Image (cartoon, rainbow over all chains, first blue to last red):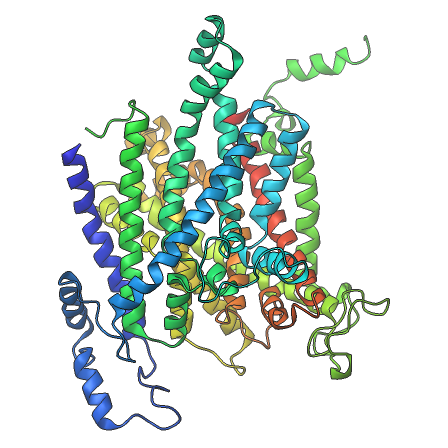
Length: 308
Length: 308
């Protein structure tokens, strides 16, 4: 177990280095003057350019500049944006909102996704089963920004059931609509996965044994079938949580949620390289760590899988 | 009862003797497919969308540049079923002409991903050892960058303007998506090639002195490509949605190009007063994505012998 975790952590190192290097190269080494438009309508003063060039090692060859950046990262120093804001502080400010939004989305996936999947899986071929299959297919085909815009238009603006935008006040109630939109795609996958997994396990030997022992239906389904069927669903939701923690550029943009996705999008469009590389590094790390955690939970839930 | 028997016997007595009665995997799959309602529905939609993309002039007598500001944002009427957008252009005409750019991006990205991922996956799976390690780790690195985020950074780094030719704008989006999307195909190709590599017929070819290239092209690729094609087909829907999302965010296709994503992005500002600007292009986009996903799903069901 310990050796497995150590090996996985070691394998992460090249991936993190490679990913951050690609992002770093894309942000800094591509054509275009990094100071274009930084100082309003006129070109930046030479002193400012010299100062910034020295600060971000822009004169060094790319690999060298990257290694210096990596060194700073290891010391926990994410650097400063062009406006002189600390990247670390900005990320810390935005992260709680993104975590909250991700949790709301996961709650929807669990309640609606697993619920619909169970209803469909228990009665295969029924009306509900077909309804779930068709509606999930439809939801999967509608891009998130379309779902977001349409729900915002009707639920938010026309009927005023939920607040249409979040703004500075990221309360749980304000996050319901964006959370649902963010969850919609995964929700459909969760429902389908639960359905398939449940339907498969209903024919398993241990379920027949449980029925033969004379256990009541509720216990057979609630304990024996459900616990085994939900294992793949739990891993899917876990991995999805890792991805959601990276921020949702589109959803956060539509509903004006002040989270990491919004922060990254703003920094990309204003070409604020330090902010982009810092944020992407954090979210790649979080994604990989959550995935490792999910794999460990998988082994714990399903003893047949050993991480020896 | 007596009538249907003779033809059955005839068919049973002449197996594999004549060309027509041989059921190859492809024929078998086709036999299954034409009996599936989802395949027929998605196939019809597919043909319609592709026809629209190739000859949009068949479906509307107007051109997307026939706009009159005096008609700006007029709602649906008997003269213009879908209404007019903010520039007074006919939304129906724009929706029809938007198909070409969107489907082109989707199909070209799928081809690009198939080329990069297919070649990388075949080489990694067939040669194994250090080649496999290098290619797989490289795939891990690109897999770690979220598709949307990476494409955003690439496209912001290579900005275009209104004078950029249409084809250049489209190929930029295609390249950005293909460069970040190939690891998925690489992984599937690799595992598919791994299964085929040790098959008897490959060993036989090796024993007969066939070279690596010949074995790959004549034996490995034809036998391992089916699952890859399926995933690529389903992927087209996803790429169309990704293009629309990027255009929606303002970095994908640029205005002289007519596309669904751009139309939805424009509609965003007027959604409160002119929802028709949003709803019609959004429905076309969703229907198109749905068609590709359903088509891929149906083909997978027909090609996968395990599900029979």
